[in-house]
Amino acid sequence: MIEIELNNVVKNYGLKNILNGVNFEVKTGEKIALIGSNGAGKSTILKLIKGKEVCDSGKINIRKNAFIEMLDQIYDKEECDVTVHIFLQKSFENCFSLENTMRVLEEEMTKTVNQDELQKIMNKYGRIQDEYICLGGYELQEKYKKICSGFKFDETFLNKNYNLLSGGEKTIVNLARILLKNPDILLLDEPTNHLDIEALEWLEEFLINYKGTILMVSHDRYFLDKVATKTILLENGKEKIYFGNYSYFLEEDERRTLAEFEIYKNQQKQIEKMKESIKKLRSFGEIAKNEMFFKRAKSIEKRLEKLEVVDKVVLEKRNINLELKSSNRSGNDVLKVKNLTKKYDDNIILNNTDFNIYYGEKVALCGKNGSGKSTLLKIVLGYDNNFDGQVEIGSNVKIGYIPQEINFENEDETILELFLKIYKGDENETRKFLTKFMFFKDDIFKKLGKLSGGEKVRIKLALLMIKDINFLILDEPTNHLDIGTREILEDSLSNYKGTVLFVSHDRYFINKISSKIIEIKDKKVIIK
Image 1: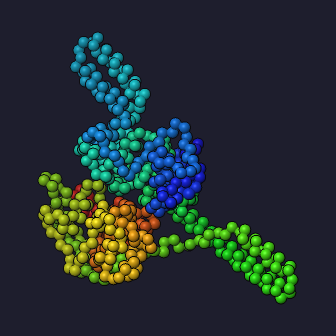
Image 2: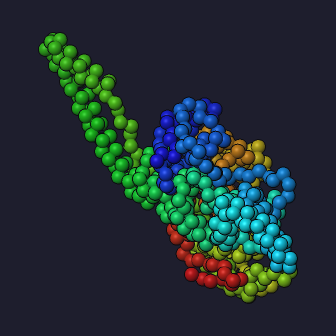
Image 3: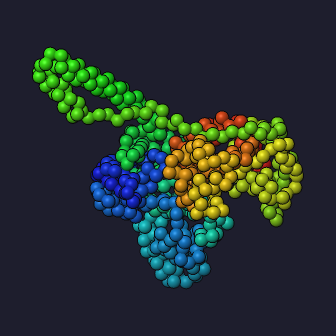
């Protein structure tokens, strides 16, 4: 059964068509990955389906009575302060109200001695229980416990004020609330952001077994491999459909590209031969003074004009590489941590921890959310000196740090204006330097406050390279990057001669980059 159908959908912002005649259908039970570079229109499609935006032309048909829920990336503040527990239950107020009434009646039954009164209470309890069962109350309770367990929502977290949660925590809570609703169609925009690896793996299994239809946007390649059954690439406002997961897409896309390249080559040969024939026929016509040769040349010329020319195919799409260099080498011992203990009041975060990081290592810092990764980074960076033990930075080590949330002092400044103040060179040299970080032509006139997350990461890397950093510390560097830019960053970090310490939940990125893994578990570190 077809759940959603997009027919020649066009959507533009200003003068630019983000979607330029997109066509595809979503069938019952399909788990579809929408992929493409940042700005390709992936989130736009989800918003169009949900009705948050409207098409400029074309049509979206949705199955009648289909129940759709969407996980967005931005959430409104609740009007009244509510706990996470209440927020999760708000969509099921009737069900949970009946359950509370049942608990009260159960308490009354244990205290009532009079048989007539007891019978009245039991009759009332029976009616309410029937209604509760019809609403799926028992299944809801089981699912509520399962989801809270999967996302590690303990009593402390459930009693937190929802409005005071971080952006990441709100994402997880809203995802849990949507999953509780059990919609027919699930629209997920970056569901894996802010999830630790354990929660991510739980979500994968949950979605694999989910009976409904899923349309998801994600840059987590392992997640897409595990969950997706179909992949749709958005590129230049159009769609390309691949009937498999992300790995299948990579193989099939390469096969299609090579096939298209062969078609392009053969057509170019045909065009050259036709041009040669036209030239020869005209030459013969001049020599023989025969109009017949000119007519034949004109005939071929008309065929050439009517020929539908195949666009040139570029075989190497990722021909850009971020230039990360460090000429200022550090000593072999970059970081030594010995007997480190960190606690807040009586709450121990790290207990008697030891590890070393050496020059040239690419170290992934892993662990569950709340395990102490950010705390450890703050200690290494010197932002937190309230600890016991020793943290020693090696000789000639120059640290450069990229946080999760990147802000600039003057966000009205353009990229070029910022670098003209810092880079030792004239405007032409500054522009040339910026091209090494994928800022071309008019890109350099973008204001810092208007940059995407991925652009901010590249700006920060460029600033650090000017300072000749030899120890990069990165906190979730891939969170705002599309897959193509992630792969470019992976290649650049792999070739970087300095030392890297990074926090990430992107398993593909970790496996590609890391030469060593430090996992924080049970207040200790495990070296892998």
